[in-house]
Image (tube, rainbow, N blue to C red):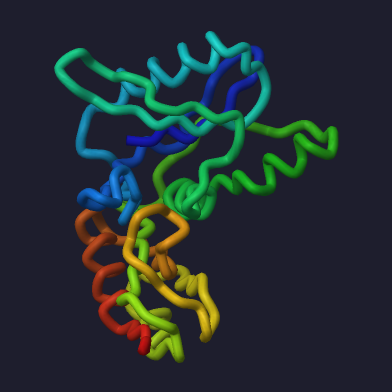
Length: 204
């Protein structure tokens, strides 16, 4: 689970709490999808993220916190005073309309970053990562069809022809991503998967 928020001296605003759907070993912890909203209750993870930011002395900056929920409650795995990777800012914008990239640029340039509570724009949103078969990439087909699929906001392909894909072991081994919205979390994931099924990585 991931909490994306913004810490100020007065309040921490949690924009999204998402589930991190991960691959099986040996790609331990590598995200195959970020799905919103999460299926668990959100108050405990938000409180854990807030406490971790305060413990590290983060006073005014975006925060990205990975949390694992177990029998002992919410446990912080990672906290970074930055925007989340894996198209996290795009997912927040799709779900809430908040443009985290713009907020971060305003703050870095010395402008006031206006942070407020948000409302959901859609029932569900997700980032679904693409995994290519092993081999040298010659071409990618079906990107236009995937982008035209219902609910799809964007399709990203990370590699150019000539890149050699190996086994999925870390995040950098992923081949691209589909960002989609839907009436629910499951609907968004289904739409993203339908779009992903249109994409073909031609490798040798």
